[in-house]
Image (cartoon, rainbow, N blue to C red; front, side, top):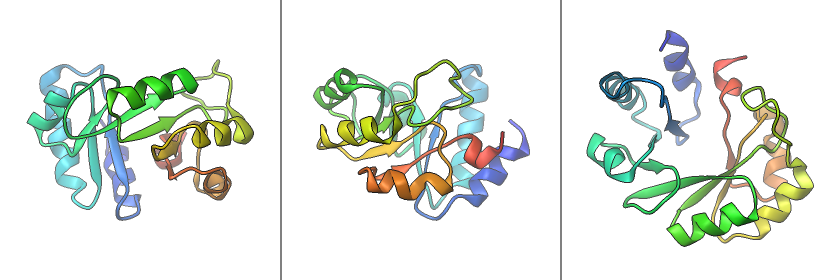
Amino acid sequence: MGDGLFAAIGRLPEGSGIVMRHYSLPEAERRELFDRVRATSKNHLLLLAGPAATALAWGADGSHGRGPGGGLRSAPVHDLDEIGAAERDGADLLFLSPLFATRSHPGARPLGLKDFAALVRATRLPVIALGGMDASRARDTAAAGAYGWAGIDAWLGG
């Protein structure tokens, strides 16, 4: 992981959250990177993608993924069925995507603001907008009911 990751963390507004995925790294390297991110992100919520038990053992604030577990839990969702499953599993917040076209999932059909807003209204959980997001789109997503927004390219460039 290059310096770009840590520069991006430095640009995050205080109180932001980080979901550390990096699934492709061997576990020891992933743990080392997690520890560096944790040390750099003292004023940010840090969720580790994967099993809640691993996230809690590593000192994350919670986990990101599907399925039950302890601690703060976020879940990736794309439609009403997945929202229902995340609610039943006890998720605390949802990442709903893709709102807009995104480089990371070029073939995915964007929800658009109208469908996004309808899905936000269908859940009691806070929803984070994801997919093609940047600061200029944040106002529109807030008007559609989003609790916040997340992005990769918005912070790392792309």
